[in-house]
Image 1: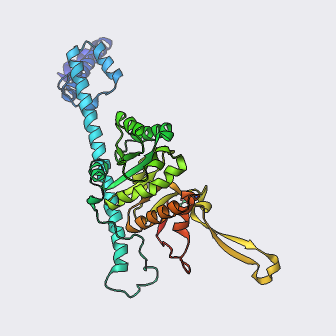
Image 2: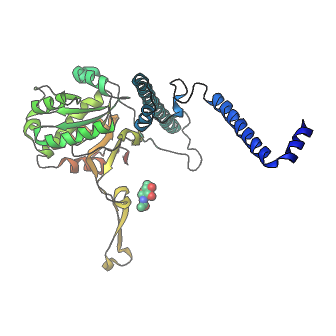
Length: 368
Ligand SMILES: *[C@@H]1O[C@H](CO)[C@@H](O)[C@H](O)[C@H]1NC(C)=O
């Protein structure tokens, strides 16, 4: 055969070349056909092959419909896509949840180890740099009898025994709406509005916002109904006590706050109080040494002062027994001193050291 082909080549080179090109083209076609048959055994447009090979967006569907696909198939595809997206969202949620639980577990382990170092049998001090005092006091043992109705609500709404709490009366309604809409947008499930009047209660109910209205016989309600922002601010220290007694950690939030992320991802859970600072940079928020200078004093001209911008009592997290002590101290002083501002009292109770005739709180605190 080779001889014959050689012969024909000799006879008419041009014609034979054309012939072999055609043969090559046919061969290529056949090969390509095989390859595609192998890669796409059900054709290009059938509904069975793995969906992730396709474009999942609307435009992809339009392309499919222009290539003569039946409406039924498109609907099937759409529902396939919808269910895949659903599953995807579910997986993402579960992964987020697991990551969060892992982080909490590690945080807990770390705290437990630190406490063990302090509370363990061995009271001799360890090597340099290993000795640590207690940062967190024991959490509260829940006592449901304090307020069974609130206990029931918290059981439904709180996540891992933590909850964002805000107090509101009708004077702050417009702020409250911005507040809960931002929380809903971020998708934070564990928050509760303490309604101080009927209007706020029904506003929350009609917006699907978890709400708790105190019983009318609970003493402080006249402040709650008519008080402005500051008066209501003072009330919160009394009301928060019940949450802690019921065994919940509270992230208290005033209503003039907008949420962009879930704050519980940024709580350390290693201090009695974690709070927002009024400071505007690292120095003012975390503290600095402010030296006052009196040249006339000669070699003793310098006096060092420790300065720190105050805690903002509109956004703080508290989980433990000393937190209740702090709340009681603040609420007690606010009821005795009618002119005091709650944020000032809150900070004085946190920061002033013990001195003759005064027993300081000494709660470990952390600026967020
Ligand atoms: C402020 O402090 C934080 C936390 O310690 C640090 O990460 C950051 O770099 C500091 N920023 C400046 C401007 O020093």
